[in-house]
Image 1 (tube, helix red, strand yellow):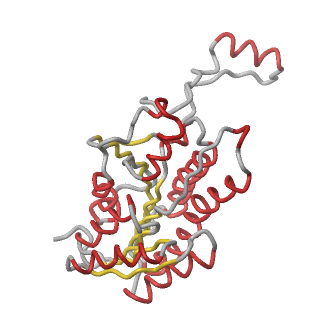
Image 2 (cartoon, rainbow, N blue to C red; image 1 turned 60 degrees about the horizontal axis):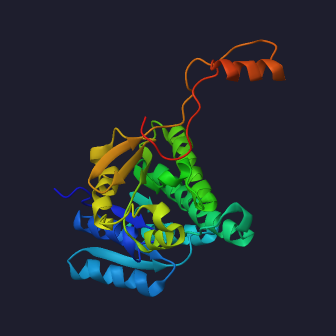
Length: 284
């Protein structure tokens, strides 16, 4: 039986790249898919591809960066398909800048789409899922939230998405509604922009990694087969599938009932506070 047989799924930002790959595979695995994108023509094209291949899909153009816009997308899914069983919070925008050159309006736009859009869509979807007693939300975060040059706005927004995933998982434990996240990696327009901006520092890390390689893990998280996964971040990097850890307190720490600045300095000098983490994505 297909992994998503009988389910209704919303994929945001599905007009191209990763979102389109998620939408196409969700449909191939039996889901009725609401294809959302801010570009109506792109959304319609992906929905048409799905229906031409024998699947069920409708396009829903519009921004998810506002409460009403996100609500309209979720409501359209429920109206068209009778439920919302899955949500892939994929929509996002990307801006690169050194802190000394960061445009505040661009920073705000990234946060509004990537973090608030994810939150708004998730909140609307979760309320509908709670009413029906089941559902799966898959948020899209990024390894950039561990620290990547020129990615302050994007990394902060995606770090917020990871924290949102952990918090919602705590809220929804035992309800039948699950929330997880993926950290994908693919050669998309975003990757081209990143590599053009950073040059050799980008190390062509996305070359040869297709959006389609990322889709199976997303569809798995939407499916009932992933019922045991909740509050997790799954990383996909080409042929590698792995898990990202939650933030942790390292070691036992140092203790003193009467901390002073001098005592704090001494604790760091002695190494009793715990290990100092390097900046950037790394392996445990």
